[in-house]
Image 1 (cartoon, helix red, strand yellow):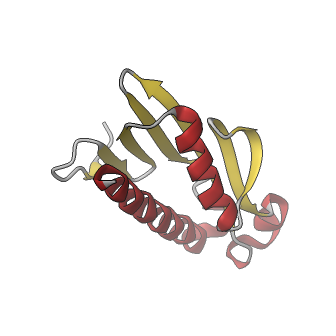
Image 2: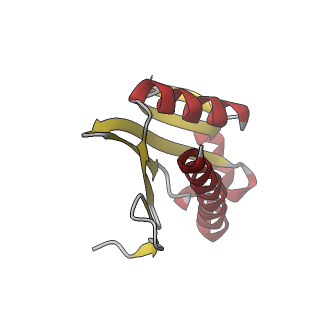
Image 3: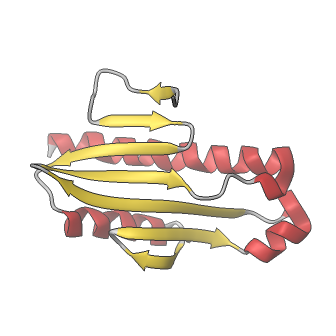
Length: 130
């Protein structure tokens, strides 16, 4: 069983060490996936495979990461946006853990995951107030 890192009072957000789930009301799959795509593209990520609703976003070069380890940053995230009844669920999942970069690489991925999930949590909070 995964340890939940940030459940808080809000049952619409659940963050574990490898996965973040956000439940949105008053939006649809296309709108939410478009906003997430725009955010990630703005941060230098590329849509490596799939569609905005079921995608792999990445930044950096996998081959160079394998060859040079922590000297080359590489991040990939699996993003899914699905309708669930009257809500829309965003799942943000670590696709690569950073093992090729050793302890430093794992730390880089962990820090980037935290940075993005913090931004998504703020977006979720602002979305609820709008």
